Length: 633
Image (cartoon, rainbow, N blue to C red; front, side, top):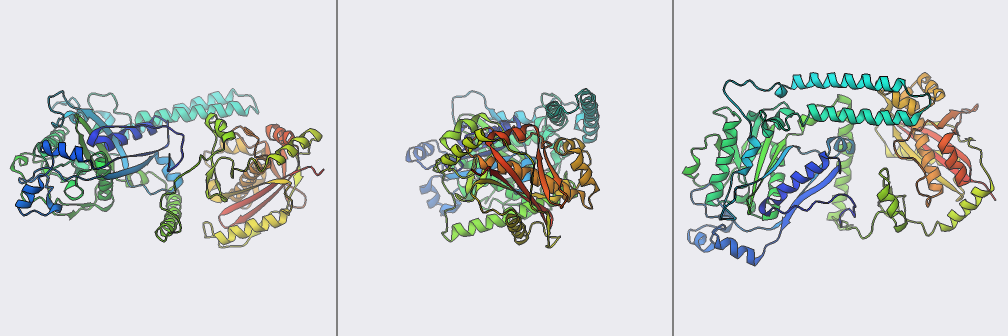
């Protein structure tokens, strides 16, 4: 609430020391179910005298008097897996992760530190002791196996790919058959078919992608999640243990993991390195799994296995678990493909998170898509560094706590009820808001004037604008701020933005958006008229022409919207076709706008009298400005 002032789904897990692991499990399920695309997960806990006393009574924490008598320093009083271990050291704090679906992460250019391939939680059997360790999390390795059983063909990525391709071909046939039955010009029906095709494709992706092993008795969840990325149990490169340093936990956790590896057929002589992070951080309870997960992400990205430096003598009871290795020194590997984390909480709650290296996601991208993602990520990194430097130098706080919602009281119900409502960045308040700056009160008189004009006259929907101009600049630059600024200023000068009796819209579109039009014919036909398509395809650079017209269409929508900021539900949503906003060239070569259908109805209802549009090109971008004017009284 304080960080985002959000109104989305909320889940409140409570699982003692496994709380943060449960949070990741809930967050991943929330995203997969479609209830959210971004989820903040994690856990926190504070030090409490009562809790510390009770932990000491249970012999769960190390005895400082005994440890000091042995000559131990405080930083070495937690020694997981050692013969001299005597419990954990108290700690407190918070940890968090930001989960989002892969497509959104790529589109936003955020750094991807790992893939959450599998999350699981499990309770243990009923018992008389609340802190007693259990083995319920063994269920993530559940599968029926026998020596004479052949592996399921579903574990073959090539087989799954063939089945997916066959299903996609079937979907394409269905789409073509249904589309042939649609009446000419029935855009709403085409939109419906597009949406249904998307849902069918998503179902096929789920069936042959990350859910192919769900509900099967011959494929364990861990094996299936690894196979999703064409990995096996032998590709697990590290395990981060709950590792509290208690006698019971370290033995039980090792036994559980060893049984899983044996049951899933890990090759002998390929021991799994064990990481016991609490030897360094202590045990923060609610935040424990979040700290461990962040540490494991660092292991994935560096390939460095951190050693348990306080492991002075590995406990002999762990010797029989020969599929595990307990290093007391850090060592560098050639790379970690996948890693697993264990978390156990009082009250018989267990959690497990399987991570895969992000390279396995990035390797699925085409070269062009990877370059676009890398460019967006570099820009975000530069902005992050600038923000961090300003926070360090005291120009603003690191966390800017929200003190209001991103919408006004008048907008609240509309934002909640409109699934297509989206916030825009407001330069004045330097935050994201619905409808730009919250200036409803200041614009009340303007709204009344607009209503009065709407009653007086209907306007012509066609209006000429300034000539399209080519702005010189470095064509290899992705978006030089100076050339973009020049383009916008030039367009603003051409449009003569001297009157306040208007609405203005600006849009910038990368030319790369329209570079590859293969398989996008339906999208082009839904958003461009035959005349526009003929003009663009015959142009020397069709992608630049399409980008310029797309930017102009978006700028027209923004200009009309900004002319009446208090009018709700002006448009049909982000997925509505833009074919009814046509950009054509006049005899002088200047772009002009021709409205029809619903956009014309909105134009007339608001009492607008003129639309002016300008298109400029700056390197790899097309820039457009549009101005919607009211009739002069």
